[in-house]
Picture 1 (cartoon, rainbow, N blue to C red):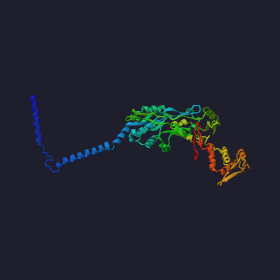
Picture 2 (spheres, helix red, strand yellow):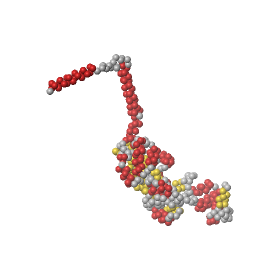
Picture 3 (tube, rainbow, N blue to C red):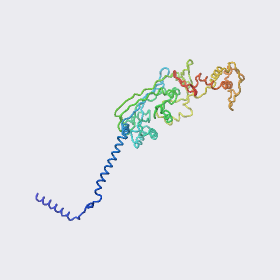
Length: 445
């Protein structure tokens, strides 16, 4: 069997050699060519050197010329600055009862640089479904901040527990999205003293442009009306932050540095909560206002105005229906204790004081009164449309004659009258807070 096997292998080999000898002779197409062959090696070597040189130049440009910048970009993709919002200062009444405080809530923000621009639309659509926010609104905020921004952009505040749970469960499908606990404004008494307290809300685009130099950023919450706006600089506090290392999905791996936020200062108003409650109950649903003042020092103890509003609705995303209701015919934003009525005849006291101190009039001065006084082609009538005949200051005050005081004011002149109004406190916003006054008169000194 072995010998037979060897015989078959030998025969097969001889047969294969015979077949090869019968094939047509194939010649090498390069055989015999000498022109240009010696340059091939030179050409290939030159090409190799050129490619290696190009790669070397690019490597030099990345590591040496732009090395520092690229290092910063790498760090910005790995290291994230997480701002920590300070708790807003508390507002209390004269007895220390809380009128405006803070409560913990969930806030949703996005980190623009965490994802390439092409991947954001899918994440935005998913996030919009959970938060019930139009995706166009999220997209607009993202584009306004810029896709390369390393600062977080707040998308929603005060979300429901169900929404917070959904975001936590699907966090792997929402890279670049962050859910965190944050202190938001809370008004425990609802609409009580709403016009005095005001409300807080996110900066508008115009407010952001006007106040960016003050350190405000997109999504920041500021006082928008009332005491919240008047004492914004006192209540807002100082931002803190954390420097953290994150993974590709934006999840925190470790905290590299921490700067605690400093809460805003508390302020105490002269309002009395229970007296305010009684004033609003007495006013009921009648358009108007009630003001209770301490005659000894001018402290405002109660200031009620109706219609009013609940400032708590502004701590979350306000709906279109709520906004339309607030813009309705009842004008609930109008503080009728301050804005609805001019001072009218009460201002005659100021005019009298200015006239007597100017030396141009005495208490016994008598002036005629008329149905109207014409100034600049415009008739300014007396309230009885007839006048009261000759009157002195006591009589003019008793009858509240308009044309009498028109004549007095024109003679003493604007500067004298304005100076007296300052002395009476006009042109100053006297918020019901002990020792706090804010001048608003155009010529205030």
